[in-house]
Length: 252
Image: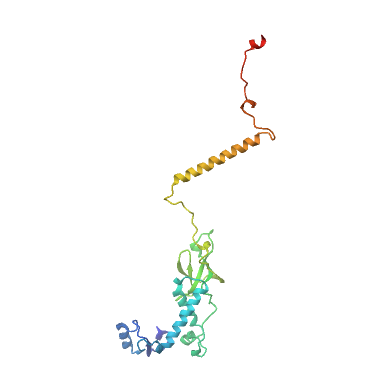
């Protein structure tokens, strides 16, 4: 790939003695292609200082990007890829203020599409995937740039998947609040299956009965005249007097 894209032949390859560089398949490939190997002494990373220092730069940059937007560590691969993408488009002193991208391709890189890693964005939902009453966009998190596409890599918190899109509106000053309860899934609390439902039903019935008794007592107090005592059963208007003597005894 390097030879096809740059037009230059790989003459030598310098690396440490890692297992990925010392396998029989890789050694056979280098021998067949005529690539000279330059290996470091065991346990001497100082002899490969340029690569080690650049690797540290990438890791530190990715760590800063994750902590700046409070992203989980699960996005470390996306952060490392974005860090390398940005470093390849930054001027380098060893290349006389030229970017690695320009030194490799022979043209200056475009930077108008660069966005803040981990910022909140709104992705357009294609019309074929929604009906007229649904929202036109949904919130996502920007996590990088497309590898082979002219688009952005976005993380959808609802589906927990990485999607690619070019129709994106970025809010670079806002980040996703991972610890905010409003971002969590909202559910309806259901009673525990082990809870005694009989006690719950009895408590509800007792509360209803107490409420009805209170209502009846309030209605009786409203009917009674103010400043008068409550009448007993013998003083009520609908009380029928008892017949104590006959009419003959009264006329005698």
